[in-house]
Image: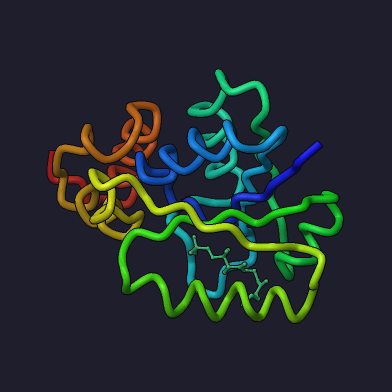
Length: 165
Ligand code: PNS
């Protein structure tokens, strides 16, 4: 039984994240998408909202669970009895941060390995940050996030008074 954690902020989940979820769930028996709650910067969506959106867009995937976490990733991984941490690499610019994070995690917990999947080329430019910006200015989100997420983004931006449409 191979269990992996795919951790992140998912603020919000994009097609780039979905690509990693869909591919990694085929490699492992169980995939736990770990949603970080205690981010230093203020997220646009609360942890509950991010979890709900992820649950909605992964509801067809039987071996995927969405679990929020606080604190260190390795403690979360140990608590979940996970064998692996999975991260997506979009471009060389991701590499330095990801390398540092995986090596730090390995020092903290040598029993948990980090595995990298390179993001499919059509999503290599995509990030939650750019999606939030497009949403803030009323841009078309259909290529970037599932419709359920686009709906939540439009709602959020209209309550913040930043939606131009
Ligand atoms: O989607 P993100 O923001 O790139 O995800 C970053 C995340 C959540 C994987 C990372 O910030 C994390 O693991 N945070 C938990 C705190 C921790 O374990 N830090 C030590 C590792 S360097």
